[in-house]
Image 1 (cartoon, rainbow, N blue to C red):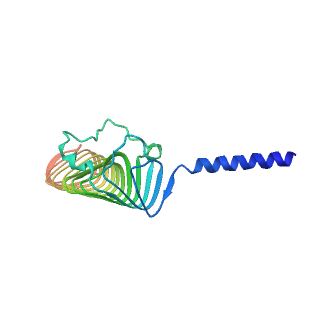
Image 2 (image 1 turned 30 degrees about the horizontal axis):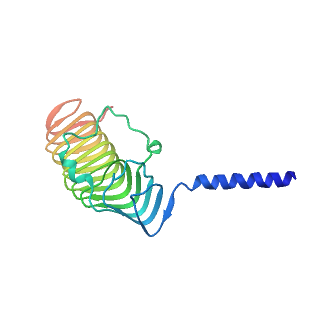
Image 3 (image 1 turned 180 degrees about the vertical axis):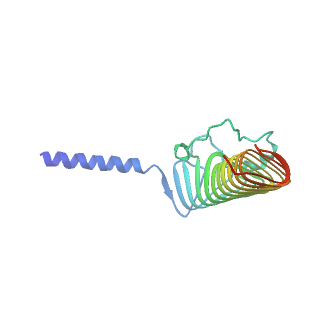
Length: 229
């Protein structure tokens, strides 16, 4: 009798554990990302992000296709949502609406302040994502709370980043890497190299090359530097 009770108890525990582990419904080879609790392996597709305020909890492994993104409206915002007073949440503590591992393609650009892309994300006009790891490309602007890799657009803005920013203007709060611009680079805290006509950093540890360079030590043309913390 005791053995039977033990077996029944173990069976119920295993079934309960299995039930908790299945928090996403698997889809292959294609499905829409306009649903909740889905794991899509292959191709996910939809009109634009943010059709529902409900936390969707969608994971795409492969290709994500967004017909039209809210990035079309990104150039119209009065100021960047990146604020130095904001404290960044650790990625593991964020409940993401979507995670994309692979390639994200959007007609005008994905805007999702609680989404993460690991790989390549391309948007026609602009993009705003919580985190990107890899390569981000848009025509007008790219905004990310956390970015590791390459940002390539006319205007790039990141809260905390590592890698390379290339554009007409680049902005960052905390950046490690290289900022290359046609016009200006600005970073509150910079570790690396700034190359542009006008470069400014309030806390630089690295090198500035441009027409006018400003850091915590000095304001001079052509080449400026600081290698002491």
